Image (cartoon, rainbow, N blue to C red; front, side, top):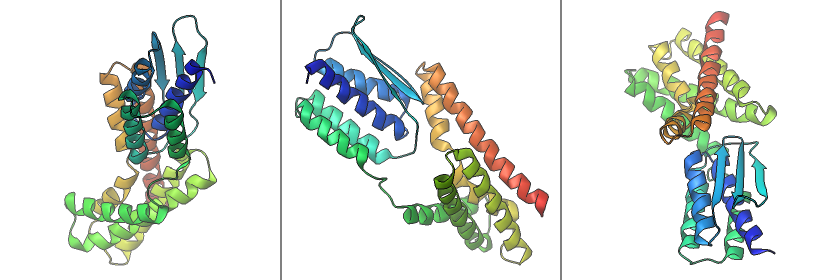
Length: 247
């Protein structure tokens, strides 16, 4: 395999894994450029957006493109790619070894199983309810509401590709469950329960990445992620509003 093609393949795969795992676009481009420069490629150029990566070497060589069709949050994979990148730039790995390691990271499943995520979301919901001024009477209803709502979101996301629909349905379930608990004397303040329960759905990473990309001058990526975060917030708000309208 041509050396330049091997380097480009490693750069593209590293960028793909990072972008699919929720990394900021400027970090993706920086990692790809560092790998390319460490192997002596001249004028390496990378351009990442939330939905695609473009990479070229020198001004007259062919350009590589890869589409990003699915995105999630997996900080473990980002850390793994960063580690491989540092080993490559430190001449501790050869290209073939790096490519093999990156393919293993790409094929690996999420670090935490779904049931662990649901349990974590449940406790996050309960703790946020207390932090936002709820009483301990609200803790258990918020814990159950947040856990069930997050489980519904994970389950519905497997049925439909549009994540916003899954978030809307999850918020609707949260609104219904909070109303159920309050009407049956479990819990004191419905608003505190709902606020805590929707926190696991709030796109905090998207908002943070959008701000960081905008501050780094990546306007297209920053605006795209900002719009994505706004749509998610709208889906959550609409789900709660529909639940109130029903009951």
